Length: 130
Ligand code: HEM
Image (cartoon, rainbow, N blue to C red; front, side, top):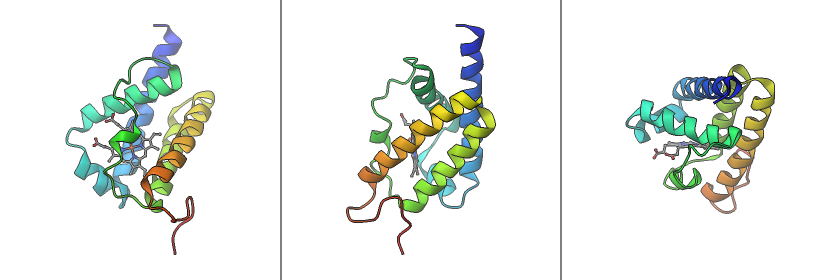
């Protein structure tokens, strides 16, 4: 692996850990992550693999679609807003600008797909319900 690729992998790992630092201190996301994830070190490695695959094109994530690991979650629009805010902050702090831009584009796109799959039909997407 080249030095650049190694550096990108290290930055992705730092971004993932920063994301969970922010998400675990959030009063809505924190309890959900704690209830669902038994081993955080193992989970970080899985999410590192996902972002390495998504951003660097490696074959490290081989667990099907990330979406399938969310279908059982009871989420509302607020979960998405907060998830994305934490991700944006972590990406901007930890990734070089080009990689951060790519990560944000991917995260926004996936958040929107997850909304269509996980929010009840008829609930406005991307709008906080009254
Ligand atoms: C409402 C927003 C979201 C919430 C509350 C959420 C929550 C969670 C939770 C609780 C898990 C652990 C599931 C388990 O291990 O059983 C998980 C896994 C994961 N999430 Fe999310 N998530 C959200 C959005 C996203 C988005 C938009 C992405 C990608 C851009 C993403 C990527 C992942 C990945 C890669 C995993 C690991 C899946 C695996 O085990 O293979 N999540 N998420």
